[in-house]
Image 1 (cartoon, rainbow, N blue to C red):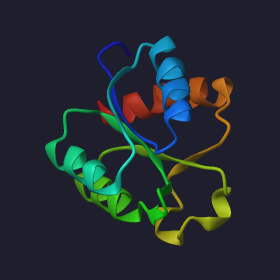
Image 2 (cartoon, rainbow, N blue to C red):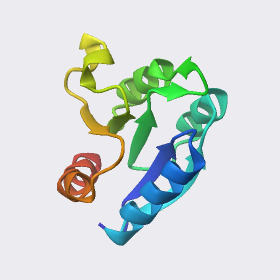
Image 3 (cartoon, helix red, strand yellow):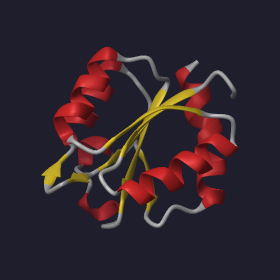
Length: 119
């Protein structure tokens, strides 16, 4: 997994840093921590990562546009949310969800699948 790169889209700085540390502990290179919807869309357009972690609520703006673009590009991603899976539209039923606070075992289980799907 050392060659697997991730984009972390999370507006809470300390949660983003914690997630970055967890991902790095599994050999994932985090290319950027992004907390703004427009900046996230720019990063997605530029690429350079194999999967993304997408916080659903970015400073009061819903990030489904980012998720739609990732799906269009066939880039694997996982939603991160404190609201639970019930808030996610049905069009994303196949997307994994990490509920906050992040559980290291859950991340450990899913990261290999995300990296493998990206290969």
